[in-house]
Length: 152
Image 1: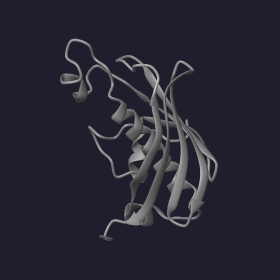
Image 2: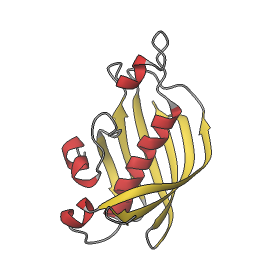
Image 3: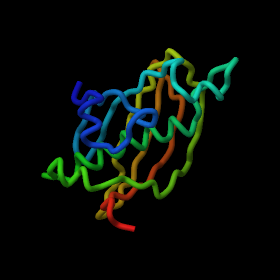
Image 4: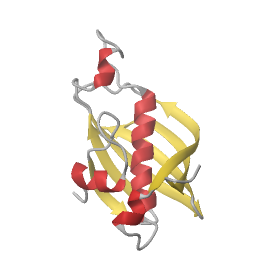
């Protein structure tokens, strides 16, 4: 384990119920990140999606992949202090080629595997995959930008 949820919260501004990554297990700055979320029936989203047939929404999977990508981007920026990170946020710019291959259900461990395709200044291009038990459940190409929180 590289980062537990407490350390992740020092990097990302997300909090319950929208922090969608529990651990970072591998990180190579400028290259890739792996981490996971344990999907539990106690997730608020299952109250409505769907009460008698709980399926973890694809949009939540994409957001979890993006959060992992945000950690990769922040940790790939070089020597950035925790104070500087606290004043920045990652914005989604695009989600391309998204595919959902298999439903994710309570009890699954959703593993995020993100590869940095390229970085141009504050813009990050990511290849994102989500797996359960080594089976691909979702994938997408993500583009995000790191900006100052005070920027409008």
